[in-house]
Amino acid sequence: MHLFDPPPPAAGGSGSDPELDKVAQHLLGLDPDGSRFAAAVRRTFDMILDGKNTGRYRWDQLYKTEKTHFGTVVEINLQREFDFEGGEDLDYRICGIDVDCKYSQKRGSWMIPPEAVGKLCLVLWASDAESQWWAGLIRADEKVLNGGSNRDAKRTLNKEGRASVRWLFSEASLPANALLYLAPGDVEAIFAPKHGTKRVDELFRRAQGTIIRRAVVATVAKQEDYMKRVRGNGGSRSSLRSEGIIILGHYTEHSVIAQKLGLPVPGSGEFVSTRVVSTDERQEGSARKVSIDGGWWRVASATDPVETAPLLPKV
Image 1: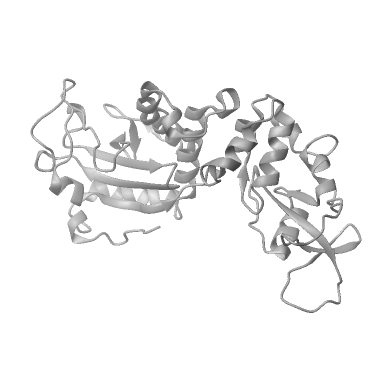
Image 2 (image 1 turned 90 degrees about the vertical axis):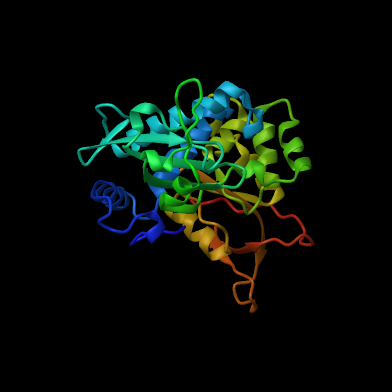
């Protein structure tokens, strides 16, 4: 992620556009590391895919109209996230300044409507497949717009315009959709079982060591009570225990276990699974180990025999 502070000359030096400077400073003050922007974009992908009801997890599975609708939904989610006021003529009013929100499936191809000409635009691009997003500001003056327009009189940025975007965040990381990073054969195996419980078992069996977000569980389970499929007492934590697999969530005790085992630490609404085997507390070596359920455990290798996993701390 790159924060342009101060912006490069191509984006308009500090003071060249006081309103743009003011809005940029305000947005970076609200979200210095871009995590709130990223969460709103991630939420938009999950809403449009609607995995819980459709089982979809890829952009190319969407209808054309749904892809077009993404811009509207991300605009709404950003307004909810930051509590932006509605603009007088445009989408938002930030620091008393009207700002239009524009998303494009192709970076640089934002469509600027007539009412936004001369005004500030917050331009966005994101790719679920690349787990990446960009957000920047530009003053949509005539000099940065192409002459032609579509039937709605919307115009695109010209070469100068594309180079003049002041990027608040570029090449920023989007919370990953784990299903996009698994081998095709693994994804097919995950969705093969008829029952949601078995599909969730297969997810945590095949995606070990990978952060699994709640939305991914919902997509695989395709059930209203999808979180029940993860927990103990009949969920994946119970059914995979005999295979030596533990599933850690966003709890203090689980976070400690994940850290000590060298696993990604789950955030809110996230999980990570791994197979473990018992080890000797006194055993020397580089293997990470942790005390669980009265014994010492480490991440299993492919050649380690299967042992029943320990019971995780109650939360």
